[in-house]
Image (cartoon, rainbow, N blue to C red):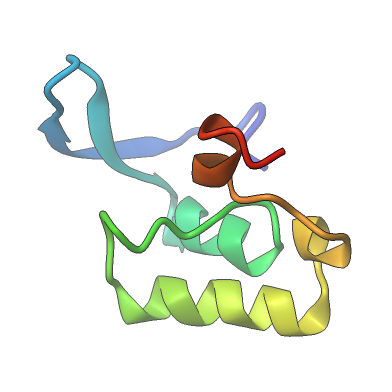
Length: 83
């Protein structure tokens, strides 16, 4: 989605493991929202309750776009052995 493009990372914080937490923008396009809308990502509501992100994921689910075209297993369930 952003390969070869100029992006901006708006850093929110550095987490306890030293990872950068933030948002990626390409001009006025919120890449996180765009990926959710395309069914290319999960919205982890535990850490982000933004309604627009929830709506983007819900729309992708209802249209069976991207990962929602099958029977996906949430990454947090996969990590805990629900494979």
